[in-house]
Image: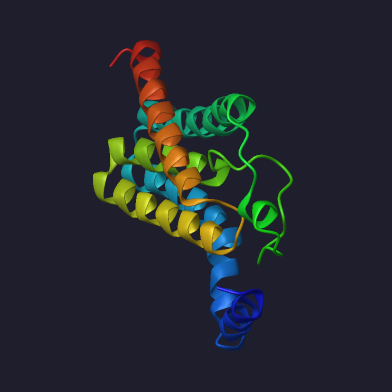
Length: 173
């Protein structure tokens, strides 16, 4: 596809409102999903303070460990250039200046989804679907490759599993 055709495609997306939807999914939806993950605990564990504390602590540790520890360690080892840099185009959302693999947004959201799934499987599945939507939107926005999203899912799932095992030992079911 030549550059003129690509610009026309993006112009059509903007004129039909797809850009607004894409921006919301790629930028604002993660915040709503984090709030939803907390709400799952409030609704599911109301009146169970010990279980609720474990749930909130697991969400916090899984999300932070996924993004600030695992993602950063992987990015040191695997330095992947973002699509908008590699292909020389302007991304549809605010450009990010760090390596792209794995997706930090998706790793956090997947960690939260898998943590929520342990308490409420249906809610966890819905949060996981939200993480996929965010990932697809970030690919379409030009800030991630599809493999970055898959890597973020794997990081989130593994981090949530490790946190669950650790929480079982700390809270001794």
